[in-house]
Amino acid sequence: MNNEREDIYTRVTNQIVTAIEAGAPKFRMPWHITDAECFCPINAVSKRPYRGINVLILWAEADAKGYETGNWATFKQWKQLGASVRKGERATTVVLWKPFEAAAKGTGDEEASENSRRERGLLALGFSVFNAAQVDGYQRPTRAELPEGGRILAAEQVLFGKGAEIQHGGAAAFYDINNDRIHLPRFDSFRDAEAYYATLSHEMCHWSGASLRLDRNLAGRFGSSAYAAEELIAELGSAFLCARLGLSTEPRPDHAGYIADWLKLLKNDKRAIFTAASKAQQSADWLLGESQAETTTAAEVQAA
Image (cartoon, rainbow, N blue to C red; front, side, top):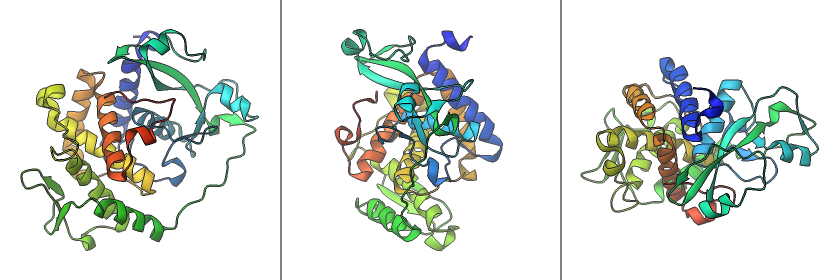
């Protein structure tokens, strides 16, 4: 199918599927980020971070194109900054959610795609952004970065501050839903502190979805694929959380068995990745102690 005729759900899903398939041989997914400049994709004008599905879209695109910065903006916004998109550069489509009635009156932005769908009272609109690597005349601002000790301290405060029961020992990391307990290997079993906290963040995302907390029941939405969907949500939630904390996330060979299930899920359900990204963002927000109202920008409302 011609990309111009595909709806936005299909276009985004195909992009993520392609990225997953490309990284599968080395268990490297599009959300495994190690470059601090790309941790949190942000809008170059508003300085607001992109969220949910848009983070995943921009990570996948940056990885595929080798972009070394997480600064993005529309054609008009780059012009506003005194920069210009180079001739021949191709845009990346991200998603803007608007209440249906407001969207029906027009977005005021000719870059908004006609490919849209009504979804629970929201309209999904595609709009085009370009990376800073695609423009001339833009001076990237200096990024202030916490030293490793500060980042680890912040991770400890977030991940240990929620009161989860964590038991150390053994070789496997997992969340025991029956006893509401996280199991992790001993700290010294990990390569370094970042690897420990990245693994803990994955299990904390599972923990956050329990009935006592976010009550994330996926059976009705995903049926027999609920387990695969939950693992995908934990993976994405961990990636979003680590990005906010400035921690690298790296491939976990022990998750190799999930890749085929994720690909099957996404190929059979073009909206699955949207739901997974939304639930993952909700989990990351909750663990960070932020409400969705506090972290959602006016330009981006996530659909459940």
